[in-house]
Length: 264
Image (cartoon, rainbow, N blue to C red; front, side, top):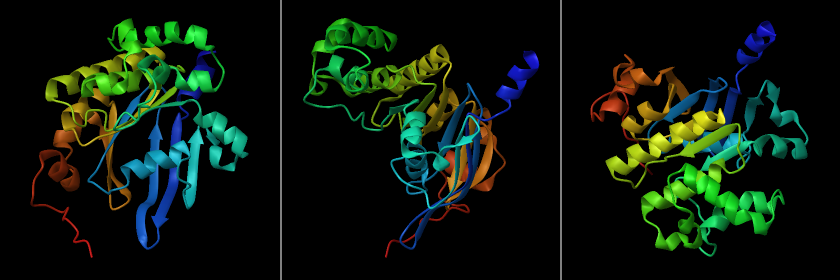
């Protein structure tokens, strides 16, 4: 049994090979290779327009890549029938950058929206289930009766996180989780993310510009530049990677190998 478990652990939860995506003449992903091992958290960094969000959207099935393999638990989901692809991606919980909460729905319904839509729970049970997940992100049950517009930015992020974990996914994606938050609230959200990932035993992928957040969330990190992975290593070494592109980006230096391109 131990040998079988070791073999299972050696298979990446998410494995990307040769992932490519272009929009007209603009090459966004130019042969991305990445492994995310089970139960670990990968942080992807890179400049604006470097392809981080496109990478997540390809894995989520929101964008179809031009070429490459997207494997989950060793199976290339791109070769599966559309129904099976959807089932594989339904195992992913997503925290969007702006929260993406439904303004017309109360918080409790936002949290369990996916469960209600898939008829995994009834509306009668929905409030209690929502309260359970709100508690896991440090929010009182009474918050469930409020609407998103009545919440602060930090509270909206917490509600969005509660929704992301509501289906108890074995994979979690985070798109700029601390954007728009002050440093203290950013640290709080990062702590909640780490706690939720550990509690679920999930595999996580996050994209961020926030280096403090990247080191708090990530076990490993990778940087995209010009559509390729230019560095991959431990997140704790982001500030002293020894890679020129990574060092310029993480320290915010104007001078270096990364130059701003003029838009024509």
